[in-house]
Each structure stands twice: as C-alpha cells, then as structure tokens.
Length: 165
Image 1 (tube, rainbow, N blue to C red):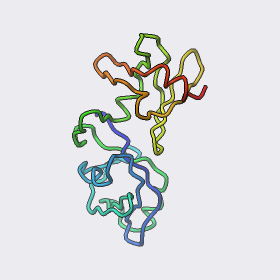
Image 2: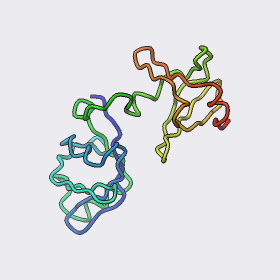
Image 3: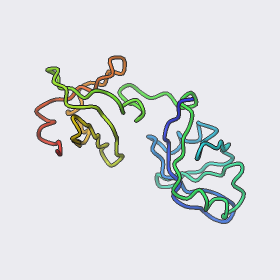
Image 4: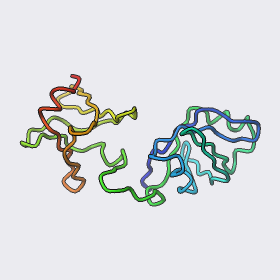
C-alpha cells in the first residue's frame, strides 16, 4: 500500500475527540474523500468532517474523547493512494516529486529531489554529492515534470537566480 501524507494533527478540538488538522492537500475537503486515514500505521475511519479557514476538523472512529485525541497531537496523517482524488493537469503529489532527477533543459543534472517543504510556494530540496540546494517551485522555474522518465526539468537561468546553496 502506497501512502500519501495528507495532513498533521495540530491539537484536539473540544471534548468529543475531534482533531484540528493542518491539511497538505489542495483543499481541506480532499481529506474526507479518503474515508479512512492512517496515523502511526493505525487505520481510522472518518466519522465526521468540517472545515473552517483552511483547516480541517476530523472525528475518527476509535478517538472517542479529548484524552484519546491528545495522544495524536503532532502526528502525521496518511491516506492510501488509491483513495486519493484525481489531480488536475500539472498537479502532483509530493511522493511523486521526491526522488526525481532535477535537470536543466540542456540536460545538466543538478541533483535529486529529496524533500518538499510546504510554504506559500513549495520549496524543493535537491542533493548532489552531499550538498543540499533549496529552491522555490515558483512559476517559470519548473518547466516540466516527467514522472515516466523520473525527471524534473528546470529553467537554468531562473534556477540560478533563486536557488539557495
């Protein structure tokens, strides 16, 4: 089973076991489409869902009260890939980006994508020969994502301007 990171528990919400969740999907409502989520390898059926201001609130089977919810604070939430909603053209799951070879349009290998940090613009971390390079995946820098060839093609000129070595 391939899992996708879809959120992180921020804190318990109320006394009935509800969780306040920071979502890593395009829209908080995408989380409820999974139906079942996994925390520390344990499956939890989603019993209730609501959203407010970009944050999701989940009620999970097996989390009956605040004490049980407190044990899940700061835990990562995963979902099965086969339960994931289809993405529109040009959108990718982080798990698909990590491991791609980052190359220029001319074919120069810059490194391998090792991490994606979710900020207002995703920040990609690539590594080559033990050195880390970070760059925001802003408009214009990423020219093509080729999952078949396992390549992330970037514009060298823009990359050189914004990359942090």
